[in-house]
Image (cartoon, rainbow, N blue to C red):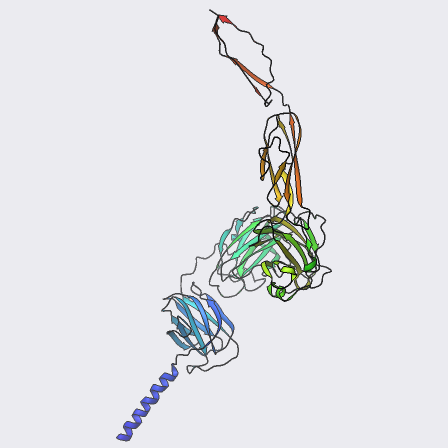
Length: 542
């Protein structure tokens, strides 16, 4: 009997130890992989593509009450902590592990080979599937070419909100098009710019077509210009004005992203500027070419060799092969310009970096870095912010992977451009005011001569002259660049003429003998001169 009891106790102890061994709470100390869980039922988010079963991951966006599944292509065991990587365990078990979240916020799954917290280092892919979450959005109405939403090209972007579909109309030109939606536009010019801003988890692909829905021809398939959760644009060229074109939008991956919305628009790009006959960029930062007029600057990446230093390589958003340099003086805290690629040899396109570096060495301050990874004919808008007016900056231009690219730059704002005056000519009658407006330069203007002007400073003035003649008014603005001409000017010519005289006369009559009479006359078109002779009859009654 005693031997039996001892055996029974031993069996119970072994079973208890076995249970504890089978359901250990694993807590790994090494972190790798992260993601944001989808909110929509059925959405899948990849956490890591090289997950070791010695690590934990960070997954945000968890909603209490939603059901999730954590998967690992290596199988194994998952321990889900909340609050921190070593916080309370809210779920554990073999992968794939399905659980109902008891917290809202972030979870930390530890990945192991078994319940005894075994480890292994081969790469595996981990992901989180939202099994039961928010209901999926209603099906897109434009998930076929023949239900495409028609957009009207405009000079500025008026965004249309869109959402991915749930089916594939055509095989993807890049990635998997199992959620494509369609848009159309009637070309208003031979070039049209298609812009798209994706929500956080969406990796968009944009494909443009000519023809009809029954017979489509792909013009372009663009993935590189549109990044996950970012903004991008593509310019379709060689279009026929009046023809209808189509484009579709889809997410690159086969799984449903956790966010599926985006905005898109079609705009008519500005015309390609005329080249201004500028000097070529310098081959080194120290020999950077000073630019006084960036509007219509034409250049090429051919014939240049790499010039850089350690901090420049680190700050740049690509690799340097055939870079060249310009320098300019900012006229505002931000600059904006358009970039056209007119030809290329490899298709990788151009890279542009705006920065400051004292003496072209040491620390580099970055203000914008453009590197689409493909040759986009443009125009592509590029903006840099955080600049200080009056300070000098560098613009580095490089062919991606050594691509030989010819390009044109058109300045919009923030970079000194020649002064213009609108209107440049005007013809008016004596005494008629003319509003004159200056633009370009550094944004500050002086006007001369002062005679007839409402002011001698400011962007807009009014000119008024009483005498017949021709008057020339000049607006002057400083370039602010000591390496360039000190100022730039533009003029307007105003011709003042005598437009003739229309007279209206009246009197306060009738009047009796000995009474008084008031005579009145007005003239139109003669300004300050009254062109009339008094000649009248007075009738006396009584």
